[in-house]
Amino acid sequence: MALFGGQRDVSLLYHINKELIQRIVDIQVLLYKLNVDQTTTNIYGEGVLKSYDTPQFVHALINYNPVDSTGDDYGVDVVQTAEFAFFRDDLKDTLDIMPEIGDLIEYDGLFFEIDNVNHLQYFMGRNDETWFGCTDHGYSISIICTAHRTKQSNLNIIPVRTGTQTIKSLPKNV
Image (tube, rainbow, N blue to C red):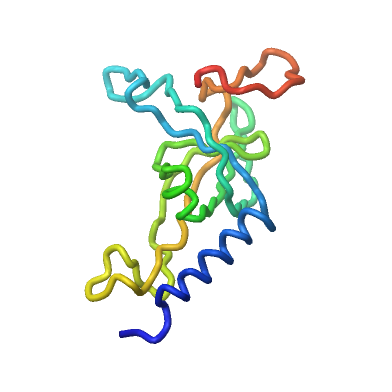
């Protein structure tokens, strides 16, 4: 049996992470879950007009990558990726949601579509839910999502090219 990584260590780590993410850093993003049942698909199985559930505020740590722009005959296209790290217990226990590939994250007026979800960040290198031998050592800490910036005109969430919008309102399809 391991000397460190038990329930007391996990409890300390849980409370420090919760206070750090929710009270000190306090960055919230909107997480839009893709609603597969209401999304219409074409004959190729592609979702042309995607539908999303009601967005939820989630605390996150954000790591932006530099903006890269490419130009061609049709104009300039901006490419940007970012990593969003979520405290797993907030998502699982409090909000009862898990981010998946295809979900959207809104932050600072930009929309990011999730490309990859990583659940493999463990305290002491062990997941207490799946580790063979002992269930009181280890802890699954966070969920890290890699996402790319997507165009707002493709999402059908907020009106674009309709003039200036002075009051931020909830999206129209939720």
